[in-house]
Length: 243
Image 1: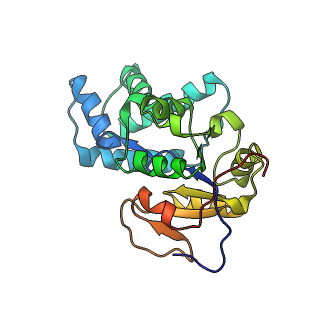
Image 2: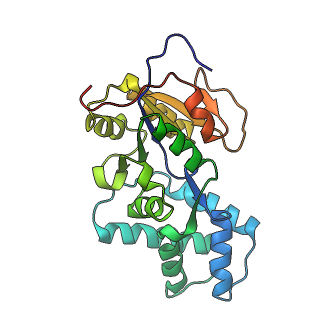
């Protein structure tokens, strides 16, 4: 649905996790499978509670930690807390180290089935495409591994630029590379408080992808449930350099 006059769009940017890619099965099933390989039994409901508790604890931390030492410390702490919240004893930290390694791997991700068709359709119409995501190197590696990077003109990861969503600067840094005006751009994301707020504060038109069909209305924000619907929301023109 469109509200008022909207400028023609030539650039589309996307969040990564839960917009283009998702865990194989779920993050809970990834954890349960890993623990089973180690001979440790837990359940999906227990893992879900452990993730919720752990993520609440570390929600104030960002993805812009620079040194490898600090990143390793962050992930080891996260994994140790996660394991502890699962009720598992890990005196020497061996299990936590394996969990940290697993969740920083590009191998645990899969693309949603509507992603490649959506990117192909926009590319055929001459659009500039990119990803703007909070995360580390594994996000970029996953996009390459899943053959999505070939459709993208830019991949901006918060680890690389030192700012993260919802800070509007991560959006501004990206579009400035291509001499784009915010009004020419669309940003598609799954987390309203981070993706939609950040894009709107940067002057970019936000689109909420509601894959879980939460069916709530957020002001006058455009909403889709499948990515292939995005191209039908706006008038589109091809991107031209230095236009």
